[in-house]
Length: 139
Length: 137
Image 1: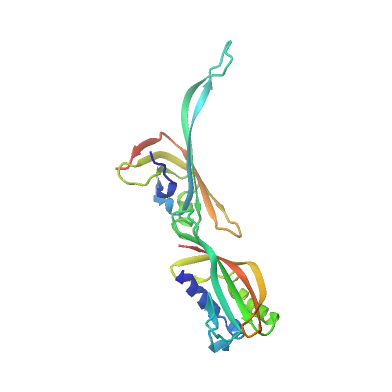
Image 2 (image 1 turned 180 degrees about the vertical axis):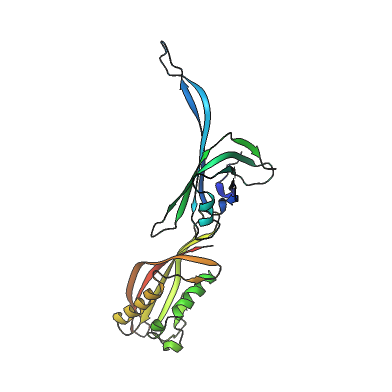
């Protein structure tokens, strides 16, 4: 099974005012699922044990920040302003037929921007998963 | 990298104060890429690509180059230094106009001066600097 890089990644955030295409200048994208656990250790147990309860997840996008009124700049930052809800979709191997597509309701936690004097400016946008994640394929 | 060669040439030859220090004055174009022509009159400017290229950190294309831009004079080291100062004024912290690219960083990163002996035994003084030039597509 061949490995692959993130160079084909497609990331979209579908919110009320339209689709924010985020992969134009992206550098990193991570998705971290998690699950809450209930401690069921009791009695004479010598090791902890848990019950799985509620699933959760977070995604984090990092990329170059483009300028004013540019798709990867202020338009993307505004389209992913903190509190905006929508659907986060990402296709790590691109959107060709049959390639993996992740989709989940998500809340944007806002665009954190960085402006170093001697380097490119960048933006980081975190998303809180807001419902069930689906893993399908592009059709 | 014709696009950046042309941008640098246009910027350097567009500097009146620089050209006033070079052979031919404002009417001349004593600015050369890679190497001055045989028997070119001093003083003149030579610039060349030292290294660099694609960054490959995002889907959009970015370039990161180092260019060496310097002046040559047979007069004195100070005269070569004056040429260098005018080059610096034209490039350091400036935004170059590069066809199909956005120049978001142009800065001098290090200096270099030396003296060479020409075939006719004259001293040729050189002063210049290395410039980091970054482009975004």
